[in-house]
Image (cartoon, rainbow, N blue to C red; front, side, top):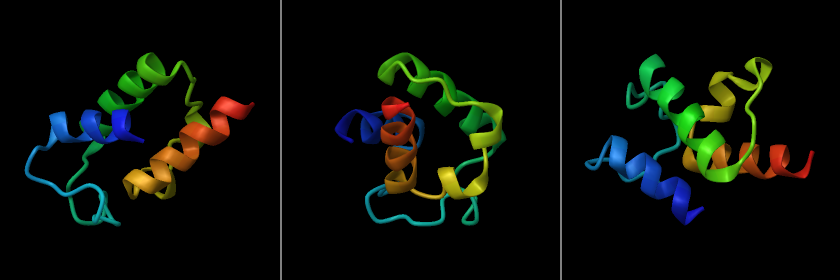
Length: 75
């Protein structure tokens, strides 16, 4: 989780990602951020995020992203 928080903080250092729970709805993450996140997550955690997993629910918070990473890592 710490690595994920570091990736997010590098993108938006002014955001408290541990407390934010609607990153897309609040306009913190845009489509370019999501593409960047997918690339960083794939590289850092050695998981592949398939297109069908690129939905707002999976990118709504750091916790949701971490749950996605853990689930994909188990597959």
